Length: 109
Image 1 (tube, rainbow, N blue to C red):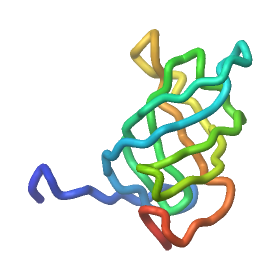
Image 2 (image 1 turned 60 degrees about the horizontal axis):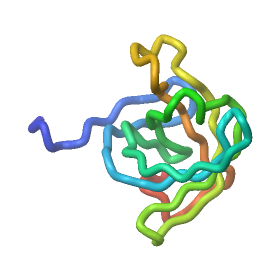
Image 3 (image 1 turned 30 degrees about the horizontal axis):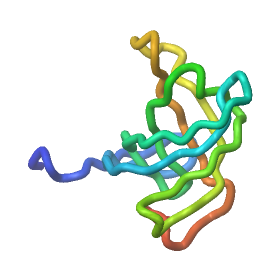
Image 4 (image 1 turned 90 degrees about the horizontal axis):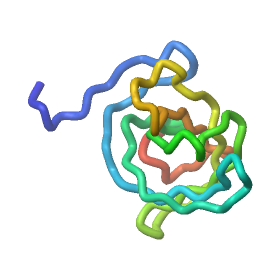
């Protein structure tokens, strides 16, 4: 498999994950209640959501967020998990789950 070919792995929780990087805007509130809008890049995606890195002060499990991808896809989502083993003191990997199923999302089951 070439380096540019996306890799697919089975997620023991719900579904497959595919390593795929693309930019998106994520809107939410930090731990102090201040609104933020950040351009982030996905680490991997699944039919139910994706993994990204967020600044630690913007990431709290259970927080609702809004995502936008090049104004062609907008969705409500929720931070489902945080990687507590993250090596960075400034950012943390987050699992983001789409609140509703979307037919035009990157992956479908």
